[in-house]
Length: 283
Image (tube, rainbow, N blue to C red; front, side):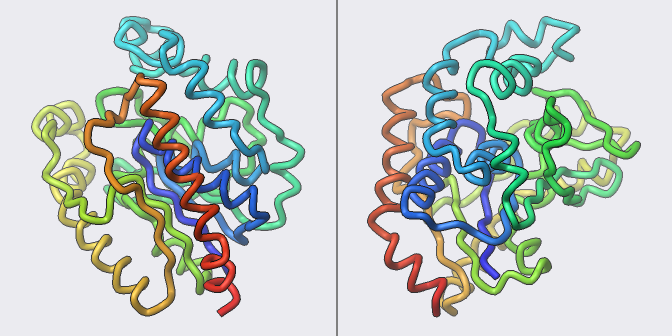
């Protein structure tokens, strides 16, 4: 079974959208899709087969204050989030750049989104079924500490899925995937450093000690996972896509030219490697 694994990374995930659009263009579909944070928020458009949708959204609205900006953090109705929650997760998919719910629901495989459990510091996975047209599960998966509210699902408090599991390839393996297409949003040489805002985050979420510990250990766990992924690639069990460089590209990037260029890098790489992907899946 083929698993598509999508790392988060906020606006850097436009690279992943380029890869996914290239795969769609070549008719390459996974049996299982899993992601955290923006990885899965953008990834649902791959599942619905809407090539180019994420690029359209980002290039049209990234400079719009309703999409993101400090002004949103002053609005109580927006739960003091940096991103405009109603605009991003309701107005856009349901009105402005419609999400194809029917095509998504026709997908024969399984789609899962990861969210970090504040009580355990671990990432829990939920099926992304899109019956909730305000995408609360996606909001929770994208909920970067300090920039989003805390979300409760089944009474459990959650934040950004990438804190507990930065690249959820092990979840794909647990689901029985023996072939992994992994899309990273940092270059292969990337080495994660400790969280600069660790002290502020741990003060804000002091009532959740397991989550604070996950913040403290995030960098080391992420780097260890990267090393494991490279081993899987050498063993022929994973095929990795990653951008050549993300230097100068912010996770809240507003430069449309930079955004288009990073998307195109992913798209062109997917087209160039399409036969490699097919051979990998057939092997």
